[in-house]
Length: 108
Image 1 (cartoon, helix red, strand yellow):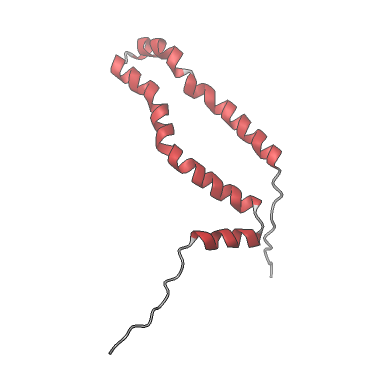
Image 2 (image 1 turned 120 degrees about the vertical axis):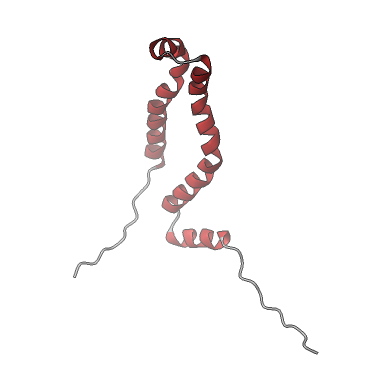
């Protein structure tokens, strides 16, 4: 019978930061290169000015729509990998609302 044993991976903060920087550097050019090329895109596709404006606005709208959730998701993911099991359990206990306390009632 095989038994799976969960092990915790060692997270190196410098390596994580370097990974984020490399990912950000690779994602930036496709988003920022549309603006200077809008004239060529319009000429090649026959796109209207309104559609071209929408094309350059879509990345901004996407960032604005996702940004409220980015920090909480990142915090939760990083907490799980950077905290010990005991610290994680304490954080989870803080996130849960306290159990309601039963109060005695007078039935007189």
